Structures are given as structure tokens and as C-alpha cells.
Image (cartoon, rainbow, N blue to C red; front, side, top):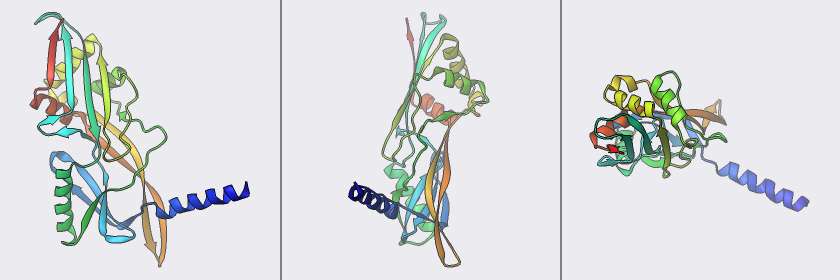
Length: 236
């Protein structure tokens, strides 16, 4: 039994020793098109290699086909709405095109030898639930319409889905808001995550756990829904 405990401790220490740590003094902010923002840090073990943490949660899919849809049901062409379904996929990792743009911006901020090596290691609380922020009617509408808790993608390469089953009045209210974008400007999604940074002070190196936050503006996602004609109405 003592031997097993000893091996377990060694394995745990090995994980800690190899956990990624970011050099806090190298922190830089980069803004990409479509309002996508990231923060980059050099590795504490390799100053020429940078990693990014997300500030913006984004809709998945290529620009030619964002992965969002809204289907509403109504009686006839002009009858009352009977409900609707809103569905989208989201991610926080950069696409290859975004990563290339971020690499170019980073080299302008540092030097030509700097490498953007990808996403940093981040972790989430036990309940990695996306929060729909309160305080406006559309946010309240979305919260009561969710079909299941919305999970945040745990890795940069992952996507997760969110689905909303809209009641009669809610379908009509959301469609009206889509026609008046100012009604959507305060509706946001958000979640928290954690990462590790390294600090140097008086020759002593210490590591600290930091909290990050990523957000998304619902109005931007709805803008793509409209732009790419992904809003459909079905007569019943």
C-alpha cells in the first residue's frame, strides 16, 4: 500500500512539473477582425514561443456558413407564431486563418522569430456552464428557453451546441428584436476559466493561478444569422 501511495505522489508531482506556465511580463493583447480578442503570453520555459488565452467566445463555422439557425412555426403565411427552435455551435479556439492573422500581429509586437504555438492550457470550474447574463428581456427569454445546460468547449479544437425551444410569445419577441438590433445590444454570453502564470521578483520565480473571462455578443451572432439567410419560417 505504501508503495502505491508513493507512486501516486510521484505521478502527481510529474503532472505539476510539466503543467504549462505563462510568463506574465510578456502579456500582450491582440484584436482580430469581427471583434475577436485574445491575450498572448510567452512560455515561461521558452520566451520565443507564445500561447493565447481567449477573451471572445465565437460562433463556430466558416464565414460562408456559420453554424447557427432559427426556425419558427406559424399558422399559414400570416397567422400567429406557434413557437420556434434556435440552435448554434460555439468555440473559443482560433481558426487556422485567425491564428495566422494573430501570428502576424504578434510578430509586429515582438520580432520576426516569435512563434504563436497555439492555445494555452486553460481549465474550467467543475460546472463549466455558459452563463447568459441577466438584465435585458432577450437574455431572460434565452435563459428560460434553453433545452439543457450549455457547456463551454473545454479544448480549443472542440465545439459545443446550444439549443433553445421558443414558446409562442418568445418566438414573436425574438423575431421582432432581430428586426431591431438595438434590442439585442446588451445580450451577452460569458464564462470564466483559469490559467497559470509565472512571475519573477527579486530573482525568485513563483506561479499563480489566474482567472480569465470570455464573452460573446448575441447581436453579432444574430447578424450572421440574417446575413447568411439562416432564419426560416415554416407554416403548419
